[in-house]
Length: 331
Image (cartoon, rainbow, N blue to C red; front, side, top):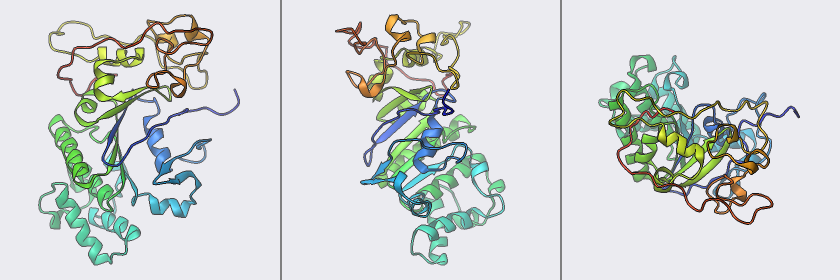
C-alpha cells in the first residue's frame, strides 16, 4: 500500500449546456465524492484531488485559488445537497441565506437581493414567499426545505447544477414534485444538470445519459435507453435485475452476490470480478479501464479484447424488456 486510497479513480465525463447526466450506483461507490470534487468541497486533509482536470467553459477549476473558486461556486456551479437540514444554517432565516448568496455573487444591493430571494422561492413553487422568506429552516417541512435549497442553488443562474440525491428521505409524492420542479427549471434556464442517485427509477424518468459507478470508477455509460434496456456491464445488469417488479409477491429478490471490495485492499484485475457471474481468465489478471475500452462505453473484458486476445466474447448487451420502473430500487 502506498498510503493513497482512491475513493474515485479515473472518472471522466462531459455535460453540455441543457443536457442531463445521471450518475448512478450503490452507496459508497464515489458518486458524492465526485460531486464534491467538482465543487472543490472535499475536506483537505484527509481528502485531496491527487490528479486530473475539471473544465468549465475552457477553465480548469483545479488551477483556481480558493478565492477564485468561491466566485465560481454558487455562481457558475451550484449544488443541491442531499439533506437540507444539515446544509441550511439553523440560526438564519432562509431569506437571509439566499440573500447572502446573491450579494456575494452579484452586484445587487441587499434590498435587491432580498427581493431576488422572494422571487426565487416563488419560482420553486413555495406559496406566500413574502412570509416564508422570514422563516427558519426548522419551521419548514422537509419538502419545503428542499425547495429552499433548489431556490438557493438557482438564485445566481448557474451553468451547471449538481443535484446529489435531492429526494432522499422525502415521501413519494413530494419526491415526484421535487423532480418535476428540477426538470422544469432546467428546461427554462438551459443549465446543465448532473443528477446523482441510487434510484434507477429516477434515472429512467429524469436523464438523457447515464454513467454507472462501481468502487470509485465508471464501469458503463451511454444513453439512458442503452444502459437500462441493453446493459453491458455485469454490475449494471445486476442492478437492474434486483429491481422488484409486479408478480414477484412471495418471491426472493435477486441480489448481487458478495460485497463491495475494501478500498484498502482492491482485488487484482477487475474490481467487480470477485462478484461477477461471467468471470473468465482475463478478469482476475487485467484491469479494464473505460477510457481504453472498444467500444468506449463499458469497462469489461466481455466486450473489449483482453491483452493477448484478438476478439471479445460479446458484441452487445442482453436485451431487457422495457417497462415501468419502480422508484426506490434496491441496490
